[in-house]
Image 1 (cartoon, rainbow, N blue to C red):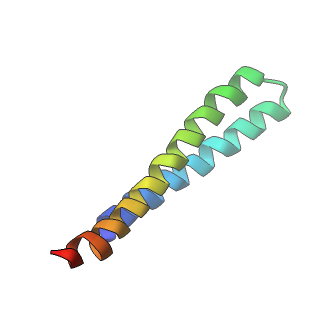
Image 2 (cartoon, helix red, strand yellow; image 1 turned 180 degrees about the vertical axis):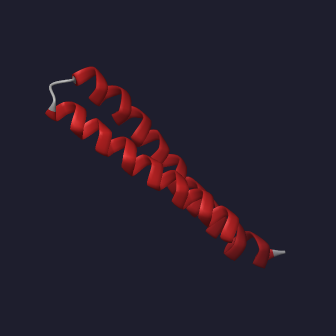
Length: 66
């Protein structure tokens, strides 16, 4: 759980920083910066959530059925 949760939380933290950078770019009238870092942030957020859900699913549902 520590490894999967750690990876998921790390990706979510990187997503938060990417989205923060995207918002700052939008505030500075840099729409290209907003779109680039916004896309990176959204994809990292999805990956982090998938890592957390996948780890939980594997540890608490898949292993118990065996």
